[in-house]
Image 1: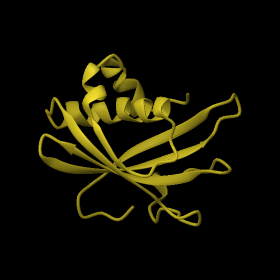
Image 2: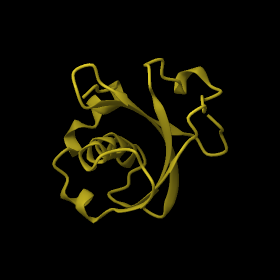
Image 3: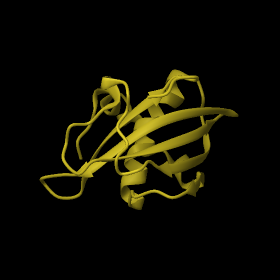
Image 4: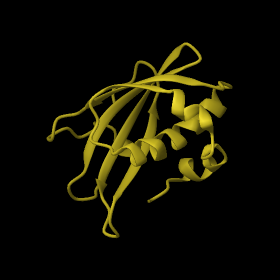
Length: 121
């Protein structure tokens, strides 16, 4: 899996058993394993916001033609797709833009970026 700098900072949460208790709502193109990997990156947001739990994640696939307006959120990889994941971190909704694309090595690569409140990526 491709790891972003954010993902490298989040490696300390890989073995977090709390991920088993997260309620996942909505549709996602991610496999269960890939969801776990994305949640691992989102674990950095838990740390940054001093929150020990993610209780729910609501996922909405973006349309095939969707491209973020802000360049830092974009992915140049072919066949990429975007999803909006809204996580409940200690009672506060935090929005993440998740990009997924096929990895040349097999499986999938991903990019996860927290979207500041009131911002449209």
